[in-house]
Length: 324
Image (cartoon, rainbow, N blue to C red; front, top):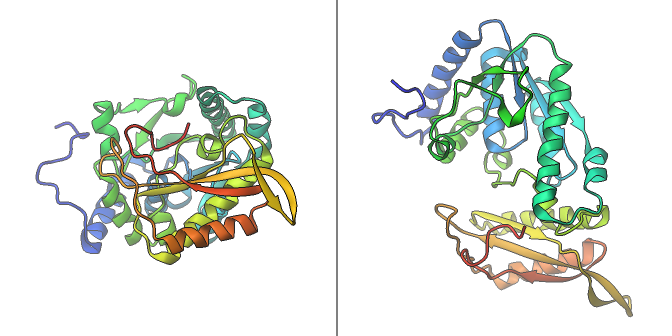
């Protein structure tokens, strides 16, 4: 039987009881697979890697080595939450790498979206590779592969170099949630005691805020993007809005405004919010006017260098979900 195929009789994990049973089963399987050896995991702070980390900590404790690379393009508070939850609460064997300057220096002046993606992805591999080479006795590499990943890639090899790691760093994979859909991963995360803000974290592109700070990334625009995005998330949460994905975008041009009675040339902030079933098409939700007014007022008052707030009404197609 192909162990990358979800059994037809496998129950949907949609209750705490089924999640607990799944966790117990995977703990036993991981312990049998790993034995007394060490496992390495790139812990991004996203739903899938966070659930895998919590599950493996439960199974093998400090035999798991988590590496969290902060490339400076994370949303506000995300790296801090990874440290708080995994290092302070779960006592994980966590290596935190603040590579902000390294990434932003490489990205300086780069305005072509695909080139930005390649720089961010390639440098992440280099940083992770450097950290992995400092470690001894690593035999396994854990991944947050979920079932849609397998369906899209037509199966995952038993051994492979994840993320383009060098050929001499080949590990056997540990993929405890590879037969689960995203909603099931969230149920398991709750059963493992992860905070709701982490379990319900929205999809986030690999390049992070790098593709939402349009054009060549500057530190001041990146700061404006991070703060405006945090305000948006906070106000959507207060309003109890159920929206699949929402974020802000800061373009690389200025607009005329008035601040303190004087003409100002500041940046606009664009709000993007979409609902989707399959991510192939997306619709734009009707956000209550009062919520948009509150968000606009806060961004203009609290985020330096911003003079306008706009709401993107474009569905997919024609527009894509991300701007870059």
